[in-house]
Length: 73
Image (cartoon, rainbow, N blue to C red; front, side, top):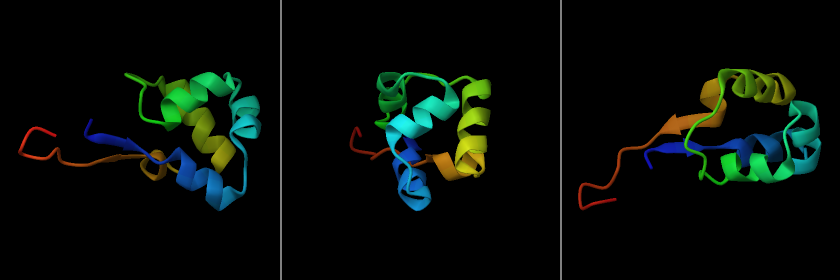
């Protein structure tokens, strides 16, 4: 998928665990893991806003676009 989720990068920068972030954002650690690992098909703007607030960052710090490999990536 061309959208890459960099939540793990921000977690490391903030020295925060997945469990702590999930608690602050009020979602389950399992659902946060789905998002963090790039398996989510969608994310609500309210969830994205809570992630940004908890991690003190911008949406672009969490999500980025990467071109897919022309060979079928």
